[in-house]
Length: 92
Image (cartoon, rainbow, N blue to C red; front, side, top):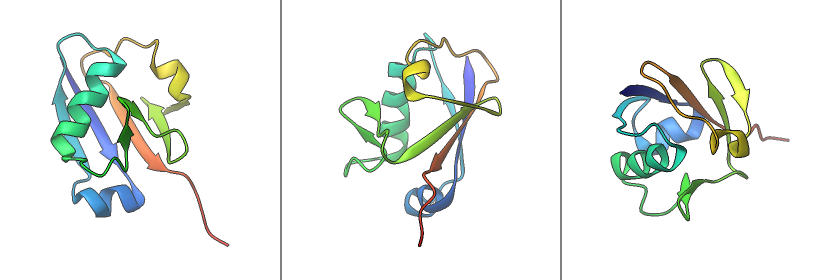
């Protein structure tokens, strides 16, 4: 199955990609995170750390609905799903 991952803000700038299409065999969160880290070459662990998305750094939406990273762990992704990964708002 294919899912679309869209990066926003500094994530898009840092990884120099806005949209990735990932091929998943099982549709699990662990598979998604593993393939995302590999495709982005996230050696510094800015997005993925310890096999998980960094909760303190990102907000995730699945098909337009914000979901917690704990919920993502239970979700089985389907063909055509769109996963938006956005940095937390910051500023002053």
